[in-house]
Length: 335
Image 1: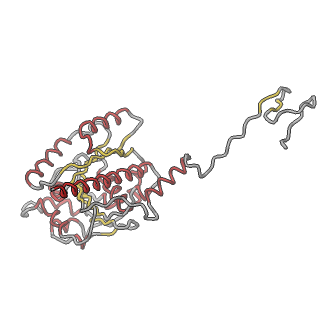
Image 2 (image 1 turned 135 degrees about the vertical axis):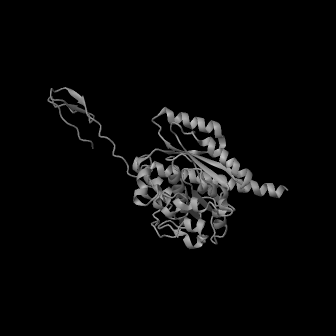
Image 3 (image 1 turned 120 degrees about the vertical axis):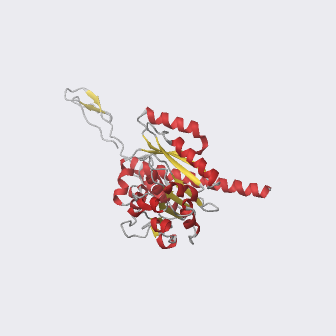
């Protein structure tokens, strides 16, 4: 039975009534409902769900594997647009979900090697030895700790002099392609992290690749200089690599608080249409912090929005590749 309180006249008050200090009846304040820690709508629960989805600890969730190896050059001669961050996080996301992936760090700064926690100090066998000395990638490939089926070809400071040393080498534009062709391991994806320039190293990447992934930041001057990159891609396609195509554009550093970010997104989508990924990477302090710990955002903070965005981008790349593979099979069957 519900207890009731008595007023001055001895009248029983209803459970939802109480007396104030002046003797007047006042409505009792309802007790706020306690949140259920298992409620899926709670921020912590959503973050935990994202973390499980990104890390895939059981290994039961897989992204479609391509029918043949896909080689991406991640390029944009404009610095600070998220090339290395995108390379590292997309590679980790795909590897965590059943794909065999290699990252080739072609930037003398070695930031991709840092982000994957791979040693790249002076004297470490690196992509320099592959380009200049013809060393096999089998001797250089380094497994990434904690990420199954992910390998890295690190870059050391020696790579800064590679362009000068390759000037008089015959077929210097195809040195990286030759190294990749001689690799004996089975891979589903190769991501080549290009330097922020259109020099010989980037040309090597574009000759070795079949697809170009261009990260574009959602900021002012986002498309500045992109025309020159696209012209270079067309030149390489015409003279050195007829298979090359721009297959993917990823929008990065999106700040939903600004109207500018939305304008840039609309402009890029209007110009490049279907090759722009639906996933957009937000501007995030956590994404910027991760390389300082030798990790990708996928392992540093798997429940963050940045990790979820890169996971969605990787999934989209995998699904698009599977769709193209099926289409190619059907076309061959029809012939």
